[in-house]
Each structure stands twice: as structure tokens, then as C-alpha cells.
Length: 258
Image 1 (cartoon, rainbow, N blue to C red):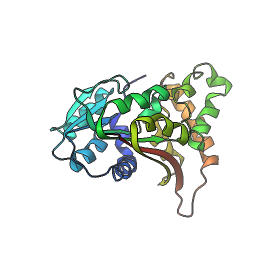
Image 2: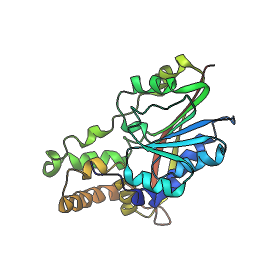
Image 3: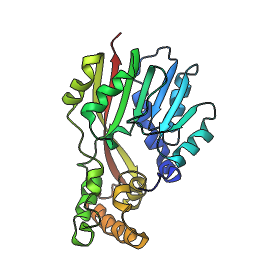
Image 4: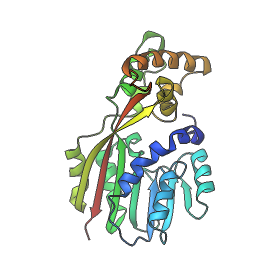
């Protein structure tokens, strides 16, 4: 799959940063020597961490060269590493391990979450936010289009790029054996956007990527035209002409036992 597009991702920077701020607000104030932003993207979430923990060594980890370039420009004092967040290992135990909108792309959560807890120092915090929107019209409709005969062969694997999240109780059970405190909640954000075209612009940087990557430019345009038509039915205009993009997100904050 092609590299992530930082410029496209940041078109909705305020909306994408808000869950990071909401997650960080639940991380209890504490001294931190090492703070890691897994899947740091262009550094918008890393910036929040650097402001919250000004004395800490702040590290951002991402697989995207374009995202990392923007992050380094944004935060020249932080350290940014190109690596797979599933296999990256810190040089020292981490005090805050922050993973905003990244772990939903990774498989094997039954192994991943217990592993992430092992990277924490005693009393360290694992803070996770994951989109939980696969059943929303925005994502269900793109899968519907991909199943149409004209797209079926090329996009047979696109829906497998993400799998539904496990229930909160299961995720709790994964981290609780090594945690003294676990907090899990879900928030559904309602984003007013300027119609179906804006929903597409939002998702072209994230959820649509697996569906567009196998297609050439002309095919991408045709697929998005089909998808936009479905979105028009799924997202009726509100009184001001805008549409509301419902975006459920699951949050987990786990504090490692001493």
C-alpha cells in the first residue's frame, strides 16, 4: 500500500486531535521520563504529549516517512523513529505509552495488548484510542460498493485490512492481569461536515486507503463516485445543509501494577 498522505490527513486536524486530547485528559498527572507516541502520524498527538510532559524524552514511532517528516518539522526536539509499532522495542521501560488511532490496523490483539503492557515501567500508563466505526454507514457502504461485480475481484481483500474490535470486556481481560487500574469507555463524536464529498476527503486518508490502493486513477474515481452516491442516501443533510458523521471511538487507559 502507498505511503500515508500527511497533508490529506491534516485536512481534519482539529477533529482528529480531539480524541487524543480526550484520551490524554484521563492520564493521571505524574512525572514521566519516557513518553512514546505509537503511530504518531504527523505529530499532532505527539505535540499534546510534549506539552503535557515537558521534561520527558518524547518519542514518536510510525511506519510512514511522509508522516514522520511532518512530525519532525512540527517538533524538532522530539525523537521520531520509522518502525512497525507492533515490533518496535524501547531502550528503556516507558512511563506513558500512547496509541491514538493506530492499533485498530494491527492484528492479534490477544498478543499485542499484553505485550504492550510489558513495555511499561511500574506505574506506567498504556493509553489507547481506537476507531470503532466499522458498522457505521461510512464503512458499511464502502464494503457494499466493493462487493459489486465490477469491483469484487480487485477489492476482495480490502475489507480485511481492519477487523471488528473485541468487546470491551475482552480487552479489559487482556490488560488487567498486569494492571492495577483499567478504565474503558466509548465516545461517539458527531462531526458536522460539508456533505458526502467531505466524508470522502476524511476517509481517503484512513479507511478508504485499502479500497483505493488496488485501483488505478480512473478506477478510483469511478469507485468514489459509486461510494458518494451511497453516502448521499446514508447521510441526509441537516437543517444547515451539513451532514453529521458519527464516529464511535473506544478508549482504554491501563496503569501497570508496581
